[in-house]
Length: 95
Picture 1: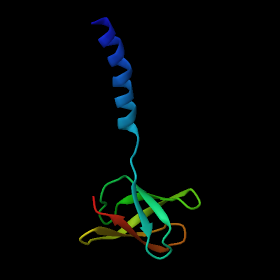
Picture 2 (picture 1 turned 180 degrees about the horizontal axis):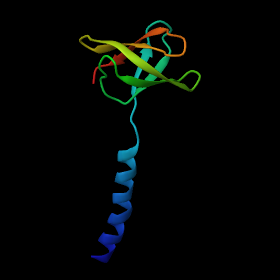
Picture 3 (picture 1 turned 90 degrees about the vertical axis):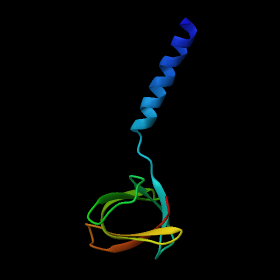
């Protein structure tokens, strides 16, 4: 019984740490075909703020969601970057 208790403590700690990490939602930029990821990993709504990570240069920028359009297999998320006010269309896999 002691051994089961001792083994369950590290397992519970690992579960708590994994729950605190943010998961990303992978896709690509429709204009440049660059691979990107959106955090958080859920479908945003207009007006939400998301972090867009560019895998090519390993940079992350915070963007405002302009619109979300669902298709059969993809979801198009149009975001605007606050720094240069540029729109980007991100094509994401349906969740």
